Length: 423
Ligand code: ADP
Image (cartoon, rainbow, N blue to C red; front, side, top):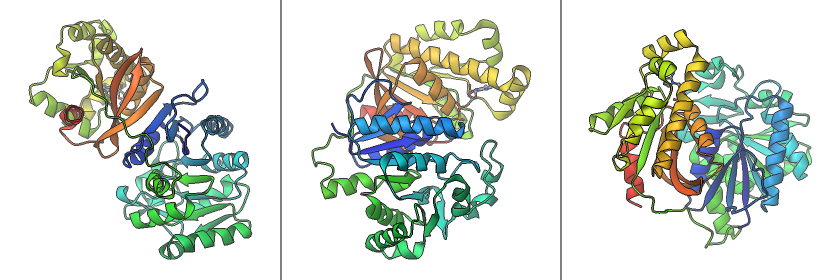
């Protein structure tokens, strides 16, 4: 069907976050990994394209995003959402501002808003200053981020050097006046030539007002939270038909595999809990792996009953990870494990696994690539920010969940399976 809102995210987990929030409305959300090479097919009312452009050179990020926009326009969208991180991750050069200006130019849009606030996750904006919890952005751990250190908390000052047109602020005082007041203020600013408007938001109610005031803008930019009210608003004003396609709930057989490459505290707890429940498991030893390759784990896997959802994990405590990294190098050992888990995903699929649970952001990237998955439909949420997704791999329909780092609770692996069985 014709796409109502075309979304572009500057990284993969940002895209799943946005897609998951939109899907809370119950309306179908389709996520594509990278700009599709084919023309639009089987499109949903909400399409999200995941790019990897957050820290790419400006020209590359602009080009990729424009290509994504062109594809979404072909899918029929005439409203667009540009999603970046709720901590406004960018450098003096970009990429948030230059990408937004390029999108505006292509769309002929005179004005857009910037609202990275995500109150549920402690990101709020007041008088243009971004807070992480109770700290100003520049006093939060983001000040030391390896790729995009955030040394200023003021979004106007951060955005100005990244754009060519004037930047302004719609403050909380305006937002508190409601959607009509905010729309009037934006209109006034547009008359004054202000193309880029930072919008304050400290609570969920603010985001509802902002979304309502801006629902007909050709381009909205921000974190995922300001997009969340849009499906309901579109259903209310008829932009989206009441019988719009719903979040799918297909029956997927029990056969499952769990692959864990994350070493976060929460994933360590999840792995320990799953093993303690008596589930079959195989620990990948990185040192042994450098000597034997994937053969031993693949041999183990071939003897498993996939109905018992076996777990293969490299997950280890930080001290162990550090020791191995020092010996073999961070990238080399990381890639070796990712590729091994990806090979296990393919072998499990070929052996009949139709539920694939993956822990780890980078690990998820390697697994989706190996499974040749480029399009996912968002399904039921397992934990906040982690939905099941449904996709095709070599012609098989599979359910896939991709959990990054610290998401989920201790019982995530069992919770995930229960969610599907209860559909
Ligand atoms: P997260 O989402 O928690 O950051 P990622 O998958 O993005 O998880 O990153 C974890 C990285 O650590 C991957 O590159 C993975 O291959 C690597 N890794 C996993 N287990 C080990 C281990 N035991 N020793 C060293 N590196 C590991």
